[in-house]
Length: 336
Image (cartoon, rainbow, N blue to C red; front, side, top):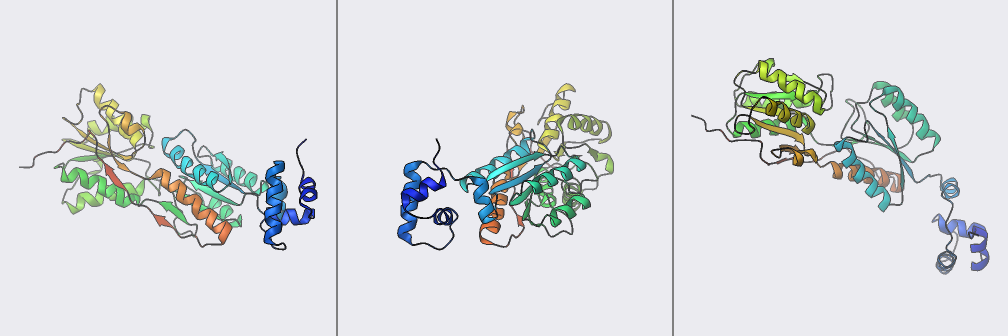
């Protein structure tokens, strides 16, 4: 039979209330009493009831995670960082796969409220005004990871997407490329779609390169949309020597499309991706890409949340650095 809190109290010669205060780090006992109670707990192998502890300290020691996909390489890497820090700080997580479904997201928020989570992390999601208002009304700490809400007050952890896209395009320009196509996400995506297009266009403009809209093809960041968008670019972007893809998956799709058409990468066409997920190392040839620190994003988001919950520390938005991961899909051109 498992030992109870009453067994601990009896063996330690204290009241049940004192054992409860020791377990929940509340005042009202001496240091000698604390050591004696902890010693008995260890000897008996007593496991405190998490729900009961939560009722005392008004915390569930549980964090809710909202993410659009569990199978995505991007979100899975962030989830690893989130779970690592949760485990290190004795927190549990409830992971909710929203599947980019607005109604399901609202339903999960109701579930997390019912579960009395101590806070919420929203990963890589485009929040609607209704979802944003519900998060604010939740009255619990919220951190956005790899996303943000324009004009909102919720703290976030992400890279500067426009600056990152600018640097990816600039990398191609410095390699001598001028006729650079772009495989973009959706125009309506104000988090990862539009800013990356702006970064691409700004780099071209600063180099005095003028290209028409026929050099941009749109998809939804997925592998299959990359194949389709690349096929479109090959038809419309005359003289194209390089492509900037707004995700590694789209870049992988571009590589497949090029292979099927007998186009050699990087000899005939250079390609740079965006994210530096595992797929970038798996393509043939290995993909040069813009690297985001996804694992660290997840770690930092969870630590910000925990520091706020445990210490009341104010959460401030963070922009993390990005880098170019050079591999084998970009060729340097010699300019005359």
